[in-house]
Image (cartoon, rainbow, N blue to C red; front, side, top):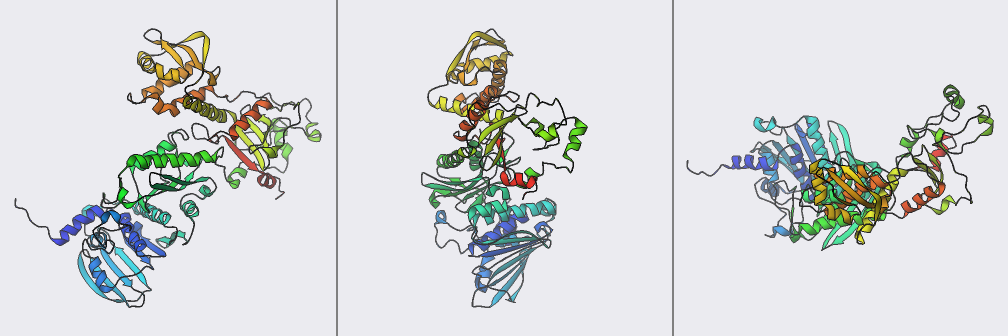
Length: 600
């Protein structure tokens, strides 16, 4: 078979297969063109998820009739004044988008330069279908109709209008985050779905387009390394989601989806979140143009870095630095959500009379019961129920000395214990509840990490070595890593084919469940690559050990122990969340308490 030169219309159809995968792909190219044109406002209108109609209108610089005709030719662009493609600063530069879209849809361009008359040009599936004067304000309006209508093989692979609309909305959100100086609006089937005003600051724009709660539960990022700069906002570890659909990454203002960047984010949060939880963040990387190649994908959604190790270190270091500064902060539920878990009654004693418990009509924080609050006395009410005493798990220890002032500490001072699991503390601005197991788990982990950094974890020898029976492969894994485990304070040796002998445990863990600890470590090792050292998985293994060595739920603490725990939380990094990403404390502000009693 002889080689032939493909006709222009077929070349455009092939190019469209690379550039225009779905309506969201076409919309991305059109909005990027509007941004590059210097627009201050961009309005997007969709019908049928973008399958039936896409319209993008902007107030940018506009095009002359001659430029409009040239823009519809392949590889014609105004964004590369010379051949230095590595120095491109615009979002678009390939000159393929408009002719590619016009080859698989009906495309109409209307544009007007300030001080001149408007002009329109229509192309229907690759063929010029008319041109002439047009009335419109300065700027450009592009309409795409019936995408892939004459390419049924492509049309049938599109998803439902709802799914295609979701992809279009995501595209506009990402571009709107990248340019908070530009106003964006999006209407779908006659309904306004998105509207942001120009001139917003970046944190407000990101929060408005992701989750409003991010505005109060984020850390700002400003970090430099090796000539690259990282900015943006990242949610606290306790402010997370079950899917990674709220992670937005930008390189030199360009929205990208890059495995290197996503992996670096995961590494930065690896010991702060459970495996099935994901942070909310928007990261903006700025670096010289010759340090990144943006011309590696037709849709320009992927990039390649000259020094990927530096970029990974930039993201991990920047996020860690910002999260370190957050200290003991934890994501707090909104006031409305917190108050919704409390109930009131016109006859507060009715429930207590029915249940026989004089305090059980209180309902704080969903499942918990304020009957467990320690030291509750109200003579005239409780006098009706003779012989009542608080349950053993709810108590307040009498203070030998005068209690410290709540105003002196961010997490307040301990006033009691609920269900032998939660510490009740009074702070200057409200009531604090602390999950004692989750909090102590984080504190033990941070102690272990610090000890490892200073040369090793102190051991506590067992008076009688303990024999732990396991299957043979588990014993093999532990024996192979015995030297590394010894550095972490766990001294063990082989004791026959199916048992391990434990001679010492990390002193930080105290008298924990040794069998459970060794069994869990064997399971963790089974999931790791043999080539990885335990130091490379230190955080995960230390978290497993910390879980076994922390104060358990159900243990009664003295007031002194409770206050000691609160003080250590205030000075320990990441103490706002446990090793699995759950919050260690929550707060009910004074204003919310007043609302409960109708005082506000």
